[in-house]
Image 1 (tube, rainbow over the protein chains, first blue to last red):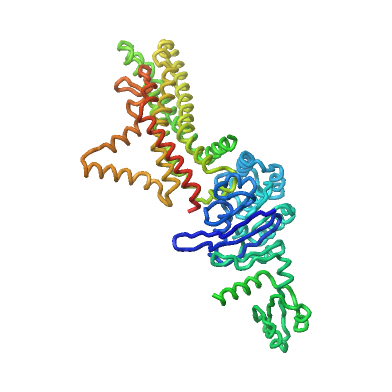
Image 2: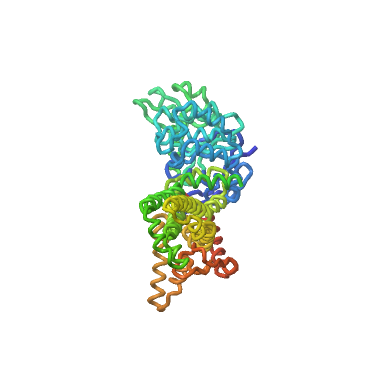
Amino acid sequence: MTSIEARGLRKVFGTTVALDGIDLRIDEGRIVGLIGPNGAGKTTALNAILGLISCDGELRVVGRDPWSERDLLMHDVCFIADVAVLPRWITVAQLLDYVAGVHPKFNRPKAEAFLAKTDIKRKSKVRELSKGMVTQLHLAVVMAIDAKLLVLDEPTLGLDILYRKQFYDSLLTDYIDGGRTIIIATHQVEEVEHVLTDLIFIDHGRVVFDTSMEDVEARYLEVMVHPNNVAAARALHPIQERQVFGRSILMFDSADRAQLATLGDVRTPSVADLFVAVMGKQGGAA
Amino acid sequence: MQRFYWTIRRELWENRSITIAPLAGAAVFLVAFMIRLPFLPANVRAAAHLDAMAQRAAFSGWYDGVAGLMMLLVMVVATFYCLDTLYGERRDRSILFWKSLPVSDATSVVAKSVIPLFIVPIIAYIVATAAQLIMAILSSAVLGAAGLNVNLFWQQLAFPRMSLLLFYHLITVHSLWIAPIYGWFLIVSAWSRRAPFVWAFVPPIALLFLEKFAFGTTYLRDLLASRFTGAGMDSIPVSGTMPTHPLTHLTPLRFFTSTSFFVGIAIFVLCVVVAARLRRQRGPI
């Protein structure tokens, strides 16, 4: 089943075109990394998916129109938009009471069990918790909601490395079950790339790259070329070349792995390197 | 309905001044009352030869005082609440959390509009009545100890009637009549990017001066003053007394059938609809 389907999504703020005709299709159960430079339109796209802003074009999220059916949509969609949006005056117990009161799919014992593993006390107010604990609390609430789609927009921004790692570990072990769709927008790609099933790069309000991780592994190869093979490697039309410690690393799209292996060490590029290569090509074309 | 209930509870958790302000006001008032309590028998004795209204006036000032204080607090608390509620959630970005839950903007804003309209006056009423009851019981003990007629005191105080009048006055004048003003505050709160207090008060005051200097009339001033004080709308008071004086003549039929009452409610409903639409479109500041 399709979780998100967008066709020709457009959003203009004043004279700025935030979304310039986005076409997307995300199937149920995928874990999608939404990656793009600052101001590329990631947050606008997510806000449209969450029904927080209206847009031109066609958009269906878990079978609903997000703008006109936002409150119904939120039965099946959860999001952590940015860090620290929990109200600072609320206590942990009140937060659980409130969510349990308004959300039919909230499993309170599950949230309590998750919180029991942390140092968060029931009587604490959010303002008394550290930034990392607030994120843990928000995650505890969200993971206890049986949603079809989870949207995370820079969920670990400003957290130390221990909390960041814990965040994704919790998500992996307790949440991902194959049926739920997750979209993660982040700049810290290296932390999520082992979780992802799909990659979407977005720039200047357009989707510039939309591929599954299997395809990435099948198509893109990176070779650390022996110095005397550089000329031969360049002849195979690499999409990108960079220097690391005096060695040339060349990236290829749809090249023959056996042929590349004769030139040097072959591996799958990291998402970050792929992003730079794809974006560089875009910049060159423009 | 359940979402509505929890959203109201959430507002009370966040805005504790709704209960704390009347409680604190009543507490301070009770302390002052107890300091003056020993002088009560002398005052009642001195008034014994006067007419019934003057006899009552020997002690009724305290009860009017509590009632008046609560009316003032209702206006202050409700005004602060209305102006902050839709602005504050955008400023601290918590609106993104509230919007991640399956509660519609309409439910949220209607719950928020019920707070100044009913919750604030009802809480103030309960606190006022409790304070008045404590005062009356302490008074009867002191009067009884001084050998004065306690029955006459309760008769003149007319507690149930006084309490009913306070309730009626709070719900009519300080809620339904002033509602369009609260509606305007909710719109300002949902719309302004900064300084909602300035936006709430400066434009109406500017218009008021404009009218005065351009046309030499004061329609707007009279209209706003009437909405704030509600003078004579809900009842015919005995001149020079509070609307809680037992002889005050209730006129609910006149109040609830007047065109201006319906116009006010219609404006309020329209304001709530506009505020809900604004909340839907506005993100964090």
